[in-house]
Image (cartoon, rainbow, N blue to C red; front, top):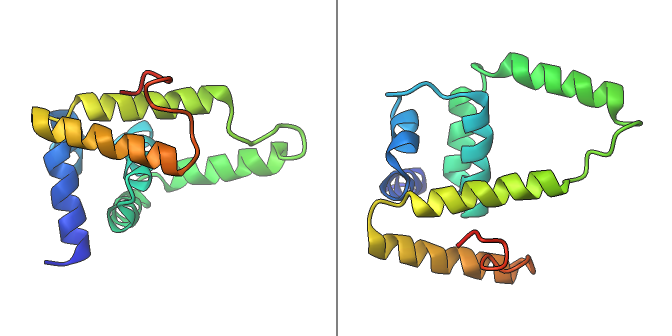
Length: 133
């Protein structure tokens, strides 16, 4: 089994019904879904799946990317593009929801342990302190 297949299978096993339906093409991917799912796969270290998601939906959201690039070019000297508290809050919310949507309880607990470990290794604020887990 190839790395891409292993990552996809593991992610589909862990994610909730809505995300699974999006990735299986049963529901339409929104731009917000793309940003959220690529953040989660990157956070979890699923690099191959992350690239596959981008590649699968790149064309669908090309116009969004072009508008964002134009906005950045027009405002980069005026506006800070560093992560804000709102960005961090949203990312924490995505991780909290992803963890809570894991269908099987034992797998959910294992994922929560993994998320704690990632936070600790990255020197980030403890997930318990941010209410992620």
